[in-house]
Length: 308
Image (cartoon, rainbow, N blue to C red; front, side, top):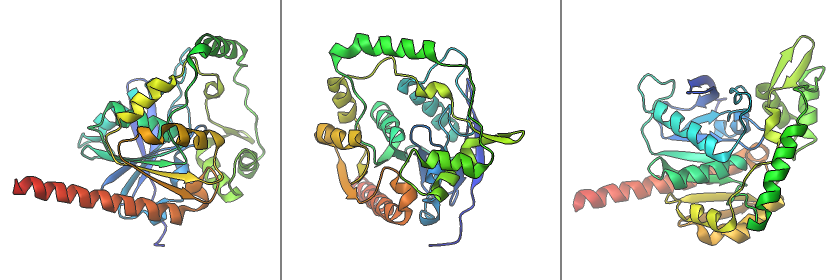
């Protein structure tokens, strides 16, 4: 393990809100865009950074999370909207004046929900994504067609029941972190990483900044046939690191969707859902081996093209 990396704060003004995040690693190294899971933030990848020093990591807070802006009043959080914002971000990254500048395509690392968003981005815009790395994430969340009306009903009812923006305050940062730890599978130091980025102090209390609308029921979900079609359109090589003690929905998705991926390397790792926080060295080693293989493949393709 090398010296602690430097985390450089970065901000990207989009059309409707501002994305916040951090970058680490050499500015001229291949870029890995990191997308966190539901109600986490960019610091979900902070433990990986000391072990991934030969790439450039760009970890962002998805809208409604961490230090990024929230959607406007009356708006909600649909997967398609996250794709819109990520496409805008990737266009910004190609501008020399951007705080992080790179050429497309890029590598994408997604944990849980972030991996599902990354899967949809890779399928929809294959020219943007060079490879896709899923950290205890697989497939997409689906619903049966016959449940469509009830899904919509429950979503609308949940919106009506959403209480005013009254947040629970904590006396200090550690108390906020302990509350987050109770909901997950990691230790207090990992919870503190998320709390440092995902809370704000107001007067004598600490509050989590996550948008409460993220907890509402989704108004729609893809059916099984639609999800399989989306996944089958992912042209990039995919590495899936799945936790032996991860989420049951991820285990079921593996059985349902594994055959749909065009290029899939699947590795089981012992541990819980937040593998990148609980065993970052082992996860980073798998990621490095996968990225080296992709670099070698790209070099071979270049040689073959030049020879032709």
